[in-house]
Image (cartoon, rainbow, N blue to C red):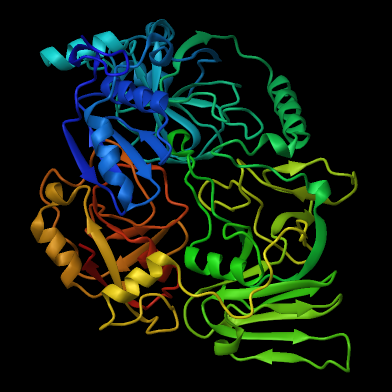
Length: 619
Protein backbone atom coordinates (compact mmCIF):
# COMPACT_ATOMS: atom_id res chain seq x y z
CA UNK A 1 0.00 0.00 0.00
CA UNK A 2 1.37 3.37 -1.02
CA UNK A 3 1.61 6.18 1.50
CA UNK A 4 -0.03 9.48 0.46
CA UNK A 5 3.26 11.22 1.21
CA UNK A 6 5.16 8.94 -1.19
CA UNK A 7 3.43 8.98 -4.58
CA UNK A 8 3.64 5.90 -6.75
CA UNK A 9 5.78 5.84 -9.88
CA UNK A 10 2.69 6.44 -11.99
CA UNK A 11 2.10 9.82 -10.36
CA UNK A 12 5.70 10.96 -10.53
CA UNK A 13 7.31 12.98 -13.24
CA UNK A 14 10.05 11.29 -15.18
CA UNK A 15 13.56 12.17 -14.07
CA UNK A 16 15.38 14.70 -16.25
CA UNK A 17 17.30 13.39 -19.23
CA UNK A 18 20.53 14.77 -17.79
CA UNK A 19 21.63 16.96 -14.88
CA UNK A 20 24.71 19.18 -15.15
CA UNK A 21 26.54 21.14 -12.50
CA UNK A 22 26.34 24.90 -13.09
CA UNK A 23 28.88 26.38 -10.72
CA UNK A 24 29.33 25.98 -6.99
CA UNK A 25 25.68 25.69 -5.98
CA UNK A 26 23.43 25.29 -9.05
CA UNK A 27 22.20 22.47 -11.29
CA UNK A 28 20.92 22.57 -14.87
CA UNK A 29 18.41 19.79 -15.63
CA UNK A 30 17.51 18.81 -19.21
CA UNK A 31 14.00 17.78 -20.29
CA UNK A 32 12.55 16.64 -23.62
CA UNK A 33 10.29 19.65 -24.12
CA UNK A 34 8.90 22.86 -22.62
CA UNK A 35 5.83 21.13 -21.19
CA UNK A 36 8.04 18.81 -19.14
CA UNK A 37 10.09 21.76 -17.91
CA UNK A 38 7.00 23.64 -16.72
CA UNK A 39 5.62 20.54 -15.03
CA UNK A 40 8.90 20.00 -13.17
CA UNK A 41 9.06 23.68 -12.21
CA UNK A 42 5.50 23.53 -10.84
CA UNK A 43 6.36 20.42 -8.82
CA UNK A 44 9.48 22.01 -7.32
CA UNK A 45 7.55 25.19 -6.51
CA UNK A 46 4.88 23.15 -4.73
CA UNK A 47 7.53 21.44 -2.58
CA UNK A 48 9.26 24.79 -1.86
CA UNK A 49 12.57 23.35 -0.59
CA UNK A 50 14.09 25.73 1.96
CA UNK A 51 17.57 25.67 0.40
CA UNK A 52 16.33 26.70 -3.06
CA UNK A 53 17.33 30.27 -3.96
CA UNK A 54 16.12 30.47 -7.55
CA UNK A 55 14.20 28.31 -10.04
CA UNK A 56 14.45 29.33 -13.69
CA UNK A 57 12.69 27.39 -16.47
CA UNK A 58 13.81 27.72 -20.09
CA UNK A 59 12.94 26.02 -23.37
CA UNK A 60 14.20 22.53 -22.47
CA UNK A 61 16.10 23.09 -19.20
CA UNK A 62 15.43 23.99 -15.59
CA UNK A 63 17.98 25.76 -13.40
CA UNK A 64 17.92 25.19 -9.65
CA UNK A 65 20.20 27.43 -7.56
CA UNK A 66 20.92 26.45 -3.97
CA UNK A 67 22.53 28.33 -1.14
CA UNK A 68 25.82 26.39 -1.13
CA UNK A 69 27.61 23.40 -2.67
CA UNK A 70 26.22 21.15 0.06
CA UNK A 71 22.74 21.61 -1.47
CA UNK A 72 23.61 19.98 -4.80
CA UNK A 73 23.05 16.38 -3.75
CA UNK A 74 19.64 17.08 -2.23
CA UNK A 75 18.56 19.10 -5.27
CA UNK A 76 19.65 16.31 -7.60
CA UNK A 77 17.73 13.74 -5.53
CA UNK A 78 14.68 16.02 -5.57
CA UNK A 79 14.66 16.10 -9.38
CA UNK A 80 14.73 12.29 -9.52
CA UNK A 81 11.59 11.92 -7.40
CA UNK A 82 9.29 14.81 -8.30
CA UNK A 83 5.59 14.13 -7.72
CA UNK A 84 3.35 15.22 -10.55
CA UNK A 85 1.90 18.62 -9.59
CA UNK A 86 -1.75 18.67 -8.69
CA UNK A 87 -4.30 20.30 -10.93
CA UNK A 88 -4.13 23.51 -8.92
CA UNK A 89 -0.35 23.74 -9.45
CA UNK A 90 -0.29 22.74 -13.13
CA UNK A 91 -3.10 25.05 -14.23
CA UNK A 92 -1.49 28.40 -15.03
CA UNK A 93 -3.09 31.82 -14.87
CA UNK A 94 -4.99 32.92 -17.97
CA UNK A 95 -4.61 36.40 -19.46
CA UNK A 96 -6.39 38.16 -22.29
CA UNK A 97 -4.29 40.79 -24.07
CA UNK A 98 -5.69 43.21 -26.62
CA UNK A 99 -3.51 43.86 -29.67
CA UNK A 100 -3.71 46.41 -32.46
CA UNK A 101 -2.40 44.47 -35.47
CA UNK A 102 -0.60 47.24 -37.34
CA UNK A 103 3.00 46.06 -36.97
CA UNK A 104 5.60 47.07 -39.55
CA UNK A 105 6.34 43.44 -40.42
CA UNK A 106 2.78 42.10 -40.46
CA UNK A 107 2.53 41.72 -44.25
CA UNK A 108 6.01 40.24 -44.61
CA UNK A 109 5.42 37.71 -41.80
CA UNK A 110 2.11 36.68 -43.34
CA UNK A 111 3.90 36.00 -46.64
CA UNK A 112 6.59 33.97 -44.87
CA UNK A 113 3.88 31.78 -43.33
CA UNK A 114 1.90 31.54 -46.58
CA UNK A 115 -1.02 33.48 -45.14
CA UNK A 116 -2.85 36.69 -45.80
CA UNK A 117 -2.54 39.37 -43.09
CA UNK A 118 -6.14 38.71 -42.01
CA UNK A 119 -5.49 34.97 -41.84
CA UNK A 120 -2.35 35.59 -39.76
CA UNK A 121 -4.34 37.74 -37.32
CA UNK A 122 -7.01 35.06 -37.09
CA UNK A 123 -4.41 32.37 -36.43
CA UNK A 124 -2.62 34.50 -33.82
CA UNK A 125 -5.82 35.31 -31.94
CA UNK A 126 -7.15 31.77 -32.33
CA UNK A 127 -4.17 30.12 -30.64
CA UNK A 128 -3.71 29.73 -26.91
CA UNK A 129 -0.18 30.81 -26.11
CA UNK A 130 1.76 29.76 -23.02
CA UNK A 131 4.57 31.68 -21.32
CA UNK A 132 7.39 29.16 -21.43
CA UNK A 133 10.15 31.17 -19.79
CA UNK A 134 11.42 34.70 -19.24
CA UNK A 135 14.57 36.45 -20.34
CA UNK A 136 16.02 39.24 -22.49
CA UNK A 137 14.50 41.90 -20.23
CA UNK A 138 12.43 41.96 -17.01
CA UNK A 139 8.88 40.96 -17.90
CA UNK A 140 9.72 39.61 -21.37
CA UNK A 141 8.13 36.17 -21.78
CA UNK A 142 8.78 33.69 -24.57
CA UNK A 143 5.32 32.47 -25.58
CA UNK A 144 4.73 29.15 -27.35
CA UNK A 145 1.50 28.32 -29.18
CA UNK A 146 -0.79 25.50 -28.10
CA UNK A 147 -1.92 24.39 -24.67
CA UNK A 148 0.68 22.96 -22.34
CA UNK A 149 -0.62 19.54 -21.22
CA UNK A 150 -1.72 19.05 -17.65
CA UNK A 151 0.34 16.93 -15.26
CA UNK A 152 -1.22 13.61 -16.25
CA UNK A 153 -0.59 14.30 -19.95
CA UNK A 154 3.05 15.11 -19.21
CA UNK A 155 3.48 11.84 -17.30
CA UNK A 156 1.91 9.89 -20.17
CA UNK A 157 4.01 11.68 -22.79
CA UNK A 158 7.19 11.00 -20.85
CA UNK A 159 6.23 7.35 -20.45
CA UNK A 160 5.47 6.63 -24.09
CA UNK A 161 8.15 9.00 -25.47
CA UNK A 162 5.72 11.02 -27.56
CA UNK A 163 6.41 14.35 -25.84
CA UNK A 164 4.34 17.42 -26.61
CA UNK A 165 3.56 18.53 -30.16
CA UNK A 166 5.96 20.99 -31.75
CA UNK A 167 4.77 24.55 -32.32
CA UNK A 168 3.67 25.32 -35.90
CA UNK A 169 5.12 28.86 -36.01
CA UNK A 170 8.67 29.38 -37.26
CA UNK A 171 9.55 32.95 -38.25
CA UNK A 172 13.18 34.08 -38.73
CA UNK A 173 14.50 37.12 -36.93
CA UNK A 174 15.10 40.24 -38.97
CA UNK A 175 18.38 40.24 -40.89
CA UNK A 176 19.10 43.69 -39.42
CA UNK A 177 17.77 44.31 -35.89
CA UNK A 178 16.05 47.60 -35.15
CA UNK A 179 17.93 50.01 -32.93
CA UNK A 180 14.73 50.78 -31.01
CA UNK A 181 11.56 48.72 -30.66
CA UNK A 182 8.77 50.53 -28.77
CA UNK A 183 7.39 49.21 -25.50
CA UNK A 184 4.30 47.07 -26.07
CA UNK A 185 5.39 45.87 -29.52
CA UNK A 186 4.19 42.31 -30.25
CA UNK A 187 6.64 40.25 -32.28
CA UNK A 188 7.38 36.80 -33.63
CA UNK A 189 10.78 35.10 -33.91
CA UNK A 190 11.88 31.47 -34.29
CA UNK A 191 9.01 29.54 -32.67
CA UNK A 192 7.99 32.23 -30.20
CA UNK A 193 5.77 35.23 -29.70
CA UNK A 194 6.93 38.00 -27.39
CA UNK A 195 5.92 41.44 -26.15
CA UNK A 196 8.60 44.06 -25.53
CA UNK A 197 8.12 45.35 -21.95
CA UNK A 198 10.17 48.49 -22.64
CA UNK A 199 11.80 50.28 -25.55
CA UNK A 200 14.96 48.45 -26.57
CA UNK A 201 16.88 47.20 -29.62
CA UNK A 202 15.45 44.03 -31.10
CA UNK A 203 15.29 41.78 -34.11
CA UNK A 204 11.85 40.21 -33.76
CA UNK A 205 9.26 40.58 -36.55
CA UNK A 206 6.65 43.09 -35.35
CA UNK A 207 3.00 42.30 -36.04
CA UNK A 208 1.19 44.59 -33.60
CA UNK A 209 1.19 46.52 -30.33
CA UNK A 210 -0.52 46.42 -26.96
CA UNK A 211 -0.97 48.75 -24.02
CA UNK A 212 -0.73 45.92 -21.50
CA UNK A 213 1.75 46.65 -18.70
CA UNK A 214 4.18 43.73 -18.91
CA UNK A 215 6.32 44.64 -15.92
CA UNK A 216 5.39 46.73 -12.89
CA UNK A 217 7.56 46.68 -9.76
CA UNK A 218 4.59 47.79 -7.65
CA UNK A 219 2.62 44.67 -8.63
CA UNK A 220 2.76 41.17 -7.15
CA UNK A 221 4.16 39.42 -9.12
CA UNK A 222 5.80 42.23 -11.08
CA UNK A 223 5.67 40.33 -14.39
CA UNK A 224 2.27 40.02 -16.06
CA UNK A 225 3.30 36.81 -17.85
CA UNK A 226 5.05 34.35 -15.55
CA UNK A 227 6.09 30.87 -16.75
CA UNK A 228 3.00 28.71 -17.27
CA UNK A 229 0.62 31.63 -17.85
CA UNK A 230 -1.82 31.04 -20.73
CA UNK A 231 -2.44 33.97 -23.07
CA UNK A 232 -5.19 34.70 -25.55
CA UNK A 233 -4.75 37.67 -27.88
CA UNK A 234 -7.75 39.70 -29.02
CA UNK A 235 -7.76 42.04 -32.00
CA UNK A 236 -8.51 45.66 -31.20
CA UNK A 237 -9.14 48.67 -33.36
CA UNK A 238 -6.47 51.33 -33.42
CA UNK A 239 -7.04 54.21 -31.03
CA UNK A 240 -5.59 57.68 -31.23
CA UNK A 241 -2.00 58.18 -30.17
CA UNK A 242 -3.26 60.82 -27.76
CA UNK A 243 -5.27 58.17 -25.95
CA UNK A 244 -2.23 55.91 -25.74
CA UNK A 245 -0.11 58.75 -24.39
CA UNK A 246 -2.73 59.61 -21.80
CA UNK A 247 -2.83 55.97 -20.70
CA UNK A 248 0.96 55.87 -20.40
CA UNK A 249 0.98 59.02 -18.29
CA UNK A 250 -1.68 57.55 -16.03
CA UNK A 251 0.45 54.45 -15.54
CA UNK A 252 3.49 56.63 -14.78
CA UNK A 253 1.55 58.55 -12.12
CA UNK A 254 0.41 55.28 -10.59
CA UNK A 255 3.97 53.97 -10.45
CA UNK A 256 5.28 57.17 -8.88
CA UNK A 257 2.72 56.86 -6.08
CA UNK A 258 3.46 53.19 -5.39
CA UNK A 259 4.13 52.32 -1.77
CA UNK A 260 7.76 51.16 -1.30
CA UNK A 261 6.75 48.44 1.15
CA UNK A 262 5.06 46.58 -1.71
CA UNK A 263 8.38 46.17 -3.46
CA UNK A 264 10.04 43.72 -1.06
CA UNK A 265 8.33 40.36 -0.99
CA UNK A 266 10.69 37.58 -2.05
CA UNK A 267 12.27 35.26 0.53
CA UNK A 268 11.71 37.40 3.57
CA UNK A 269 12.82 40.71 2.05
CA UNK A 270 11.37 43.63 3.97
CA UNK A 271 11.07 47.21 2.77
CA UNK A 272 12.05 49.94 5.19
CA UNK A 273 9.85 53.04 4.91
CA UNK A 274 11.94 55.92 3.66
CA UNK A 275 10.32 58.20 6.21
CA UNK A 276 12.26 56.22 8.85
CA UNK A 277 15.55 56.96 7.08
CA UNK A 278 17.62 60.07 7.68
CA UNK A 279 20.09 62.01 5.52
CA UNK A 280 23.71 61.09 6.19
CA UNK A 281 25.99 61.94 3.26
CA UNK A 282 25.79 64.27 0.27
CA UNK A 283 27.50 63.34 -2.98
CA UNK A 284 29.84 66.13 -4.07
CA UNK A 285 31.60 64.27 -6.91
CA UNK A 286 30.61 60.71 -7.94
CA UNK A 287 33.69 59.79 -9.96
CA UNK A 288 33.27 57.72 -13.11
CA UNK A 289 30.37 55.59 -11.84
CA UNK A 290 28.84 55.47 -8.36
CA UNK A 291 26.09 52.93 -7.70
CA UNK A 292 24.07 51.65 -4.78
CA UNK A 293 24.56 47.90 -4.31
CA UNK A 294 23.61 45.36 -1.68
CA UNK A 295 23.15 41.58 -1.48
CA UNK A 296 20.94 41.68 -4.58
CA UNK A 297 17.43 40.54 -5.51
CA UNK A 298 17.73 36.77 -5.76
CA UNK A 299 14.82 34.58 -6.79
CA UNK A 300 13.53 36.60 -9.75
CA UNK A 301 15.29 34.84 -12.64
CA UNK A 302 12.09 33.27 -13.98
CA UNK A 303 10.77 36.72 -14.91
CA UNK A 304 14.01 37.91 -16.49
CA UNK A 305 15.48 39.70 -13.45
CA UNK A 306 19.04 38.80 -12.47
CA UNK A 307 20.20 39.02 -8.86
CA UNK A 308 22.55 41.97 -9.46
CA UNK A 309 24.13 43.17 -6.18
CA UNK A 310 27.70 44.09 -5.29
CA UNK A 311 30.22 42.69 -7.78
CA UNK A 312 32.81 42.09 -5.04
CA UNK A 313 30.68 40.31 -2.41
CA UNK A 314 33.59 39.75 -0.07
CA UNK A 315 34.24 43.49 0.03
CA UNK A 316 30.53 44.10 0.70
CA UNK A 317 30.64 41.85 3.73
CA UNK A 318 33.88 43.28 5.09
CA UNK A 319 32.78 46.91 4.72
CA UNK A 320 29.39 46.26 6.35
CA UNK A 321 30.82 44.27 9.23
CA UNK A 322 33.44 46.97 9.84
CA UNK A 323 30.67 49.47 10.72
CA UNK A 324 28.38 46.99 12.51
CA UNK A 325 25.82 46.52 9.71
CA UNK A 326 24.28 43.26 8.57
CA UNK A 327 26.53 41.79 5.85
CA UNK A 328 24.09 42.42 2.99
CA UNK A 329 23.24 46.06 3.75
CA UNK A 330 23.41 48.53 0.87
CA UNK A 331 26.71 50.29 0.20
CA UNK A 332 28.21 52.58 -2.42
CA UNK A 333 30.14 50.88 -5.22
CA UNK A 334 32.61 53.20 -6.92
CA UNK A 335 34.25 52.51 -10.27
CA UNK A 336 37.70 54.14 -10.52
CA UNK A 337 36.89 57.28 -8.51
CA UNK A 338 37.80 59.63 -6.96
CA UNK A 339 34.60 60.14 -4.95
CA UNK A 340 33.91 63.11 -2.68
CA UNK A 341 31.16 63.03 -0.03
CA UNK A 342 30.08 65.49 2.68
CA UNK A 343 28.82 64.24 6.05
CA UNK A 344 25.47 65.76 7.10
CA UNK A 345 25.28 64.07 10.52
CA UNK A 346 27.73 62.30 12.81
CA UNK A 347 28.28 58.87 11.26
CA UNK A 348 30.74 55.99 10.83
CA UNK A 349 31.95 54.68 7.48
CA UNK A 350 34.35 52.03 6.16
CA UNK A 351 35.88 51.33 2.75
CA UNK A 352 36.72 47.93 1.28
CA UNK A 353 37.45 46.42 -2.12
CA UNK A 354 40.31 47.73 -4.25
CA UNK A 355 43.10 49.44 -2.27
CA UNK A 356 43.48 53.20 -2.43
CA UNK A 357 43.96 56.30 -0.33
CA UNK A 358 41.33 57.79 1.96
CA UNK A 359 41.25 61.40 3.11
CA UNK A 360 38.97 63.19 5.56
CA UNK A 361 38.97 67.00 5.46
CA UNK A 362 37.84 67.92 8.98
CA UNK A 363 35.78 71.01 9.72
CA UNK A 364 37.30 71.19 13.19
CA UNK A 365 40.80 72.65 12.72
CA UNK A 366 41.92 71.28 16.08
CA UNK A 367 41.33 67.70 14.93
CA UNK A 368 43.27 68.06 11.69
CA UNK A 369 42.95 66.15 8.45
CA UNK A 370 43.03 62.38 8.29
CA UNK A 371 45.08 60.87 5.46
CA UNK A 372 45.23 57.09 5.19
CA UNK A 373 47.48 55.14 2.86
CA UNK A 374 45.96 52.14 1.03
CA UNK A 375 46.99 49.57 3.63
CA UNK A 376 45.48 51.66 6.45
CA UNK A 377 42.28 52.61 4.64
CA UNK A 378 40.95 49.09 4.07
CA UNK A 379 38.12 47.76 6.28
CA UNK A 380 38.77 50.45 8.89
CA UNK A 381 35.89 52.21 10.67
CA UNK A 382 36.16 56.01 10.46
CA UNK A 383 34.03 58.50 12.37
CA UNK A 384 32.78 61.58 10.51
CA UNK A 385 31.41 64.81 11.98
CA UNK A 386 28.88 67.05 10.21
CA UNK A 387 30.43 68.90 7.25
CA UNK A 388 33.51 66.67 7.13
CA UNK A 389 34.44 65.88 3.53
CA UNK A 390 35.46 62.31 2.72
CA UNK A 391 37.59 61.70 -0.38
CA UNK A 392 37.84 58.11 -1.63
CA UNK A 393 40.86 58.08 -3.90
CA UNK A 394 41.15 56.08 -7.12
CA UNK A 395 42.27 52.47 -6.69
CA UNK A 396 46.00 51.92 -6.72
CA UNK A 397 45.17 48.44 -8.03
CA UNK A 398 41.85 46.98 -9.13
CA UNK A 399 38.66 48.79 -10.08
CA UNK A 400 35.96 49.03 -7.43
CA UNK A 401 35.89 50.47 -3.92
CA UNK A 402 32.89 49.97 -1.63
CA UNK A 403 31.78 52.38 1.10
CA UNK A 404 29.55 51.21 3.95
CA UNK A 405 27.73 53.65 6.24
CA UNK A 406 26.64 52.62 9.72
CA UNK A 407 22.89 52.10 9.58
CA UNK A 408 23.01 50.97 5.96
CA UNK A 409 21.92 52.97 2.94
CA UNK A 410 18.13 52.83 2.65
CA UNK A 411 17.57 55.20 -0.26
CA UNK A 412 18.64 58.37 -2.02
CA UNK A 413 17.08 61.83 -2.15
CA UNK A 414 17.54 63.40 -5.55
CA UNK A 415 17.21 66.90 -6.88
CA UNK A 416 16.98 65.74 -10.50
CA UNK A 417 13.80 65.55 -12.53
CA UNK A 418 14.06 61.75 -13.00
CA UNK A 419 14.23 59.88 -9.69
CA UNK A 420 14.61 56.50 -11.42
CA UNK A 421 12.74 53.24 -10.81
CA UNK A 422 11.38 52.79 -7.32
CA UNK A 423 10.73 56.47 -6.67
CA UNK A 424 8.10 57.25 -4.06
CA UNK A 425 6.03 60.36 -3.59
CA UNK A 426 7.79 61.23 -0.33
CA UNK A 427 7.05 64.29 1.75
CA UNK A 428 8.34 66.71 -0.80
CA UNK A 429 6.40 67.69 -3.90
CA UNK A 430 9.12 70.01 -5.21
CA UNK A 431 12.22 69.22 -7.24
CA UNK A 432 13.44 66.45 -4.89
CA UNK A 433 12.29 62.85 -4.89
CA UNK A 434 13.31 59.77 -2.97
CA UNK A 435 14.36 56.45 -4.53
CA UNK A 436 14.15 53.29 -2.47
CA UNK A 437 14.25 49.54 -2.87
CA UNK A 438 13.01 47.85 -6.03
CA UNK A 439 11.91 44.23 -5.62
CA UNK A 440 13.46 44.22 -2.16
CA UNK A 441 16.87 45.56 -3.19
CA UNK A 442 18.62 48.88 -3.72
CA UNK A 443 21.03 47.34 -6.21
CA UNK A 444 21.34 49.06 -9.55
CA UNK A 445 21.06 46.52 -12.37
CA UNK A 446 22.93 48.17 -15.24
CA UNK A 447 21.41 45.82 -17.84
CA UNK A 448 17.72 46.12 -16.93
CA UNK A 449 17.82 49.59 -15.34
CA UNK A 450 16.18 48.36 -12.13
CA UNK A 451 17.14 50.13 -8.92
CA UNK A 452 18.12 53.72 -8.19
CA UNK A 453 19.97 55.40 -11.04
CA UNK A 454 23.73 56.10 -10.78
CA UNK A 455 24.45 58.72 -8.15
CA UNK A 456 25.17 62.29 -9.14
CA UNK A 457 26.44 65.42 -7.43
CA UNK A 458 23.79 66.77 -5.08
CA UNK A 459 22.23 63.39 -4.26
CA UNK A 460 21.74 62.74 -0.55
CA UNK A 461 22.14 59.25 0.91
CA UNK A 462 19.53 58.17 3.43
CA UNK A 463 20.47 55.67 6.15
CA UNK A 464 18.51 53.51 8.55
CA UNK A 465 18.50 53.62 12.34
CA UNK A 466 21.67 52.61 14.13
CA UNK A 467 20.12 51.29 17.33
CA UNK A 468 20.23 47.50 17.55
CA UNK A 469 23.26 47.19 15.27
CA UNK A 470 26.40 45.32 16.19
CA UNK A 471 29.16 47.32 17.84
CA UNK A 472 31.88 48.62 15.56
CA UNK A 473 34.66 46.00 15.79
CA UNK A 474 38.06 46.94 17.15
CA UNK A 475 39.82 45.46 14.13
CA UNK A 476 39.00 44.69 10.54
CA UNK A 477 37.05 41.44 9.99
CA UNK A 478 38.88 38.46 8.55
CA UNK A 479 38.01 36.65 5.33
CA UNK A 480 34.74 34.79 4.89
CA UNK A 481 34.59 30.99 4.91
CA UNK A 482 34.69 30.76 1.12
CA UNK A 483 37.65 33.15 0.99
CA UNK A 484 39.49 31.21 3.71
CA UNK A 485 38.91 27.97 1.80
CA UNK A 486 40.30 29.59 -1.33
CA UNK A 487 43.43 30.64 0.54
CA UNK A 488 43.97 27.17 2.01
CA UNK A 489 43.59 25.41 -1.34
CA UNK A 490 46.03 27.77 -3.05
CA UNK A 491 48.40 28.60 -0.24
CA UNK A 492 51.37 28.00 -2.49
CA UNK A 493 50.12 30.40 -5.17
CA UNK A 494 48.94 34.00 -5.28
CA UNK A 495 46.50 35.17 -2.59
CA UNK A 496 43.06 34.72 -4.16
CA UNK A 497 41.31 36.85 -1.58
CA UNK A 498 42.95 40.24 -1.67
CA UNK A 499 42.79 42.28 -4.88
CA UNK A 500 45.97 44.01 -3.76
CA UNK A 501 47.91 40.75 -4.21
CA UNK A 502 48.94 40.50 -7.84
CA UNK A 503 45.68 42.06 -9.01
CA UNK A 504 47.06 42.38 -12.53
CA UNK A 505 47.70 38.61 -12.83
CA UNK A 506 44.89 36.49 -11.42
CA UNK A 507 44.33 32.76 -10.93
CA UNK A 508 40.60 32.07 -10.97
CA UNK A 509 39.07 28.75 -9.97
CA UNK A 510 36.29 27.32 -12.14
CA UNK A 511 33.88 24.40 -12.12
CA UNK A 512 33.51 22.71 -15.51
CA UNK A 513 30.03 22.73 -17.08
CA UNK A 514 27.22 22.80 -17.66
CA UNK A 515 28.10 22.53 -21.39
CA UNK A 516 31.67 21.25 -21.24
CA UNK A 517 30.63 17.94 -22.83
CA UNK A 518 29.01 19.78 -25.74
CA UNK A 519 32.05 21.98 -26.38
CA UNK A 520 34.49 19.15 -25.75
CA UNK A 521 37.64 18.54 -23.73
CA UNK A 522 39.76 20.47 -26.24
CA UNK A 523 37.84 23.68 -25.48
CA UNK A 524 38.07 23.12 -21.72
CA UNK A 525 41.79 22.40 -21.93
CA UNK A 526 42.29 25.56 -24.00
CA UNK A 527 40.35 27.60 -21.45
CA UNK A 528 42.53 26.48 -18.55
CA UNK A 529 45.86 26.58 -20.40
CA UNK A 530 45.51 30.08 -21.88
CA UNK A 531 46.54 33.35 -20.28
CA UNK A 532 43.60 35.64 -20.99
CA UNK A 533 43.60 39.45 -21.05
CA UNK A 534 40.70 41.51 -19.68
CA UNK A 535 39.25 43.78 -22.35
CA UNK A 536 38.39 47.45 -21.89
CA UNK A 537 34.70 46.91 -22.72
CA UNK A 538 34.17 44.73 -19.64
CA UNK A 539 31.53 45.85 -17.15
CA UNK A 540 29.10 44.57 -14.53
CA UNK A 541 27.24 42.60 -17.20
CA UNK A 542 30.27 40.62 -18.33
CA UNK A 543 34.06 40.48 -18.19
CA UNK A 544 35.21 40.08 -21.80
CA UNK A 545 38.49 38.32 -22.48
CA UNK A 546 41.03 38.45 -25.31
CA UNK A 547 43.25 35.58 -26.37
CA UNK A 548 43.28 32.75 -28.90
CA UNK A 549 39.73 31.76 -29.83
CA UNK A 550 38.45 28.62 -28.15
CA UNK A 551 37.61 25.77 -30.53
CA UNK A 552 33.84 25.54 -31.01
CA UNK A 553 32.69 22.28 -32.62
CA UNK A 554 30.33 22.59 -35.56
CA UNK A 555 26.75 22.82 -34.33
CA UNK A 556 27.76 23.66 -30.75
CA UNK A 557 27.85 27.44 -31.16
CA UNK A 558 24.27 28.03 -30.07
CA UNK A 559 21.63 26.36 -27.92
CA UNK A 560 17.97 26.81 -27.09
CA UNK A 561 17.86 29.60 -24.51
CA UNK A 562 18.71 28.42 -21.00
CA UNK A 563 19.26 30.06 -17.63
CA UNK A 564 22.68 31.32 -16.61
CA UNK A 565 24.36 32.20 -13.31
CA UNK A 566 26.89 34.84 -12.23
CA UNK A 567 30.36 33.66 -13.17
CA UNK A 568 29.18 31.63 -16.16
CA UNK A 569 31.86 31.53 -18.87
CA UNK A 570 29.84 31.80 -22.06
CA UNK A 571 31.46 30.95 -25.39
CA UNK A 572 29.96 32.91 -28.32
CA UNK A 573 30.65 31.98 -31.96
CA UNK A 574 33.81 34.13 -31.90
CA UNK A 575 35.35 31.70 -29.41
CA UNK A 576 36.35 34.56 -27.07
CA UNK A 577 34.90 33.84 -23.63
CA UNK A 578 32.73 36.23 -21.62
CA UNK A 579 32.43 35.79 -17.84
CA UNK A 580 28.99 36.90 -16.67
CA UNK A 581 28.92 39.47 -13.88
CA UNK A 582 26.10 40.24 -11.42
CA UNK A 583 23.99 42.10 -14.02
CA UNK A 584 24.08 39.27 -16.57
CA UNK A 585 21.03 38.36 -18.69
CA UNK A 586 18.93 35.71 -16.96
CA UNK A 587 18.93 33.44 -20.02
CA UNK A 588 21.23 33.01 -23.00
CA UNK A 589 21.67 30.94 -26.14
CA UNK A 590 25.45 30.40 -26.17
CA UNK A 591 26.99 27.40 -24.38
CA UNK A 592 28.58 27.84 -20.95
CA UNK A 593 31.88 25.99 -20.72
CA UNK A 594 32.56 26.55 -17.00
CA UNK A 595 31.51 28.70 -14.05
CA UNK A 596 33.81 30.84 -11.91
CA UNK A 597 33.68 30.34 -8.13
CA UNK A 598 32.20 33.04 -5.91
CA UNK A 599 35.65 33.97 -4.58
CA UNK A 600 36.94 34.09 -8.14
CA UNK A 601 34.14 36.40 -9.21
CA UNK A 602 35.17 38.79 -6.43
CA UNK A 603 38.63 38.87 -7.98
CA UNK A 604 37.24 39.52 -11.47
CA UNK A 605 35.30 42.46 -10.03
CA UNK A 606 38.70 44.08 -9.49
CA UNK A 607 40.29 43.01 -12.80
CA UNK A 608 41.20 46.22 -14.64
CA UNK A 609 41.56 46.28 -18.43
CA UNK A 610 44.86 44.70 -19.37
CA UNK A 611 44.90 42.36 -16.36
CA UNK A 612 45.76 38.76 -17.15
CA UNK A 613 43.67 35.82 -16.01
CA UNK A 614 44.34 32.10 -15.79
CA UNK A 615 41.52 29.68 -15.03
CA UNK A 616 42.30 26.64 -12.88
CA UNK A 617 40.00 23.68 -12.09
CA UNK A 618 38.28 23.97 -8.72
CA UNK A 619 37.76 20.22 -8.33
